[in-house]
Image (cartoon, rainbow, N blue to C red; front, top):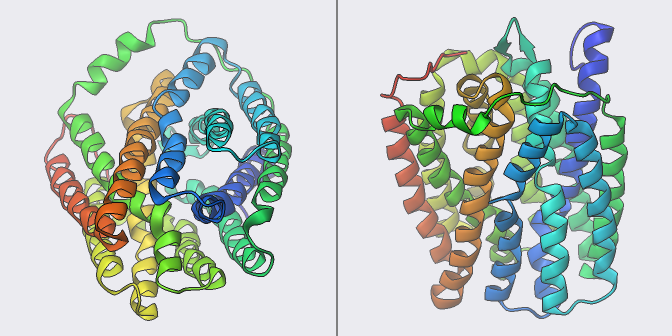
Amino acid sequence: MPLSKGPGLRQGLWPFGFLSAAYFTHIGFFNPYLSLWLQDLGLSVLAIGALTAMQSATRLFAPFLWAWLSDHTGQRVRLMRLGALVAWCVSLGFYLSQELWWLSLVMVLLFFHTSPLMSLSEAAMAQRVSVGGQFSTQRYGRVRLWGSMGFLVTVFVAGAWFERHGMADFPHWTVATLAVLNVAVWWLPHQVDPPAAQNLAGRLGPVLRQTPVRWFFATLFFHILAHTSIYVFLSLYLDGLGYSKTMIGAFWALSVVVEVIWFYFQGRWMHRMALSSWLILAASLTLLRMVLTAQAADVWWVLALAQVLHAWTFAAHHSACVQWISQAFAGPLRARGQALYSVLGYGLTGVLGALGGGAISQAWGMDVVFQVSAISAVAALFCAWRFGFAKDVGDGAG
């Protein structure tokens, strides 16, 4: 499964493939099973929602801070190495105490140093996967699929492990996977980008005032907000329905299998529709996915069908977003564009989704969380439709 042809390009892309695999190996156990570990510690659903929201809360400011440092120092790779190393050191704090206040502190520091890793990596990789100045979805997909494979292996293996040994080993998994992430970051080729010589904030303003940019970030916000129910509460929801941890891991793994397939073949498919059309399709299928999960998750084959939709609701949507951002936020603005994608897509939405979902679940039940997510998907569909009419920024089909 080669990333590219030619030794020079392999040397440029393989380290990013390894980094993607290592990062999502960590995410592949941490995000699906964090809520179950916190539940095992005796915390309430509301407290679990608050703790998981901290990951998204750090994305409200951390990506922009790290992007600013990257732009002004040109030391993107060195900053990524620093963040990964500090994150590993902080993870050792899970062994010291499991009091709520201490867990809150550890998680804030941990998420602060891991949240910018992929946005900085995506910004650097966007240049390397471009051909003739144009973003190549095929090359990007061949790199990104290694992240999906890392997630796939870990979510399945971790589910079986926790089923057999219990959730007490969660801190061990955290420390071990972050150690692998550090190895991956240090394998990246060291490069120093020219520091920003001009006021990027001044250049960013005119881009953000364009109509399609506003509609793009609006549909992004509601689309990811709908998915917060999956990312934060799906494992708890399925556990409450009586599924074993092995089965929960299998359902997560299924969604990643179709994600891997999509990333591998997306170079053949993405050019067939405009990017706005992909966003409309992804939002429509998100609505279907949330309805199926809310109404029939106790029927295993219906839940499996809902998880298969992940290929479009996440993978196709993510690739369309990354490609469009690389077009709209070109050159020195690329890191800021990726940071904004992280902040609005996975920061604010995660905070609102985790806190709001925790409160809704505690008051009306977990299934209502997914019903509300369906409403968010409707809003995402409307905004994506409006985005399709905005032509201030080119929305090419490829």
